Length: 156
Image 1 (tube, rainbow, N blue to C red):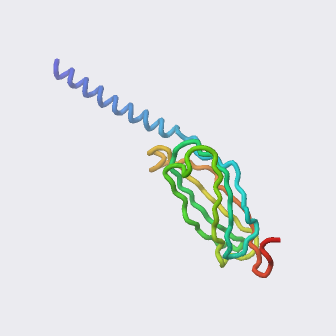
Image 2: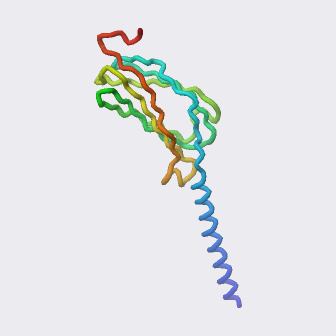
Image 3: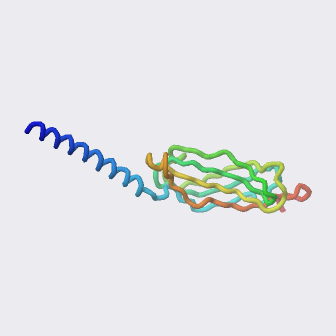
């Protein structure tokens, strides 16, 4: 009788561990709300020369405390690209709420004149499943600007 009670207790504990682990994984998998909303993005220097600074302003709303990784790239119209420094943070840099972020990026000197793009592709992780396997993503931010010819003036 004692052996049967011990066996049923062990079976109950093992079943509870399996069910609670499965429930936790299901909760992690269902947690797909985007933690950052980009309200607006604008290029403050729509025409830049190669080697000058591209200035971008974004207005974002942080609604959850999640870590983020943002891959960023500049493209010119002559099939050149420049990988920019990734943005990584564990918590929203300025806390939760609506924030305005202004940053500068150097336009490479080898970029040719014509249309160009800044692209940012973020991924967020709010729990361990998202951190190691399935991050939350949203459509990339694409901002277009113009690279001025060296012989012409950058600002009209």
